[in-house]
Amino acid sequence: MEAVKAIEMKQISKDFGSVQANQNVNLTVYNGEVHALLGENGAGKSTLMSMLSGIYTPDSGSIFINGKEVDFSSPKDSIDLGIGMIHQHFKLIDVMTAKENILLGNSNEKGLFINNKELTKKIKAISDQYGLDLKPDKKVYEMSVGEKQTLEIIKVLYRGAKILIMDEPTAVLTPQEIQRLFAIIRNMKEQGCAIVIITHKLNEVMEISDRITVLRRGESIQTVETKGVEVPALIEMMVGKKVDLALNKTPATYAKKVLDVDNLWVSTKDNKHALENITFSLHSGEILGVAGVAGSGQKEICEVIAGLIPAEKGRIFFENENILGKTPRDIIRMGIRMGFIPEDRLGMGLVGSMDIVHNIILKDYHSQPGIFLHRGKSAEIAKKIVKQLDIQTPSIHYPIKKLSGGNIQKVLLGREIDSFPKVLITAYPARGLDIGASYKIYDLLNEQKEKGVGVLFVGEDLDVLMDLCDRIMVFCGGKMTGIVNPDEMTKEDIGLLMAGGTAEGGSNS
Ligand SMILES: Nc1ncnc2c1ncn2[C@@H]1O[C@H](COP(=O)(O)OP(=O)(O)OP(=O)(O)O)[C@@H](O)[C@H]1O
Ligand SMILES: [Mg+2]
Image (cartoon, rainbow, N blue to C red):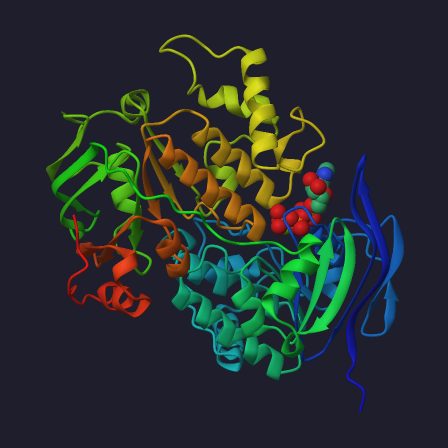
């Protein structure tokens, strides 16, 4: 029996003015299949999926859903045909409960006053069927990212979706949450759903997908069976040539201490300790990694150094001055920068409607206190960042919200790095970036190190942490379980520390 085609896109093209986002793209997805959509930042993945969900209309080409040609004039048409899209930036209302969010904008619900009990029952039935875990009465602002995503999934399933599109669902999840999501995806697949997943993490593509379609510069290059392909071949399809992914680590100089953190404690709202007795030094000319399962204090260590949250006790010396208690602005002026890649990329100090130049002026890093950066200078900086990070944009005067997700992120990071910091704190800088761009960022961090910047790098991929960092601090539940030299430790050793074990040698703080 031939499997049923849930989605068939034929010769789809779409441009935005001078930008050809999709060109003659072909994509077929079967029921009961997990299909990965792969491509560099700006390759046209989100645009293609937005045409399936009725947000954009193709300029040319045709779309078939379950064998029937369709012509969506709005997202509602797409929802009515059983297509559900989980966007990277969640579209939930924070002050409402899970239940209220599920009801919101639900086009299938004829009676406005659906019985509360019935709704709860239906949510429970969906949760049971697909192995989801959701508290219907919990408010969205109280939820973790993983919970919010579960809610988004239930929301589309509630509307009867059988075709699920997930645009970078794993970018901001912890490894445990990713495994939970994958279990849900496998479950949906078993029930005959068709699933399209976009992710830049190739190990995830290999783990979860049955087939892969690669886009490059708006065109569909190839569709392959996951079983029959290896990662280097995928990268070559994406980039168009063989790429050498190696980091050149130069030895750290440990020239002088730039940050001296001593007996630092930070408490959370509910009086628990987010950080307990943390002591370490960061030197100029080194990359100090921070490893740990998510929520082990990584966020807090970044924020307390940047002056965004207070400490309970302890000291943070920066060039022999205690910076605890200083304002974030003072700390920035002293030369400490934080390139923190947040869950909501547009939320972090970028204004979507402004162009790259004005987003650089906005931060006003480069000027003396009280003197504003003039446009000419920031245009220069913008040009430099665009070139250095290979940001795909028609010009530096293009509103950044029109850039692809990964390219927005490069603007954010470029701005921080170009501000000549003495200390650069960066957390998950490669989230949402394609593999080439990720390595470009790592190269840039290495460059900063060679210039004498002290880099604190919070990472989630242990392989990257070990390749990039001179030393790695391991956090577990707010405590530091070791500072290790990655050349003298195995990944397993570090894994043990992450779980709260103790180090056997290899430490050199
Ligand atoms: N609304 C828009 N207006 C103008 N240009 C757009 C718009 N949406 C997307 N583009 C452009 O279309 C191209 C493809 O973007 P798209 O967002 O589809 O890429 P992507 O493959 O999803 O990339 P990423 O991995 O970075 O998310 C990019 O050059 C982008 O700047
Ligand atoms: Mg995208």
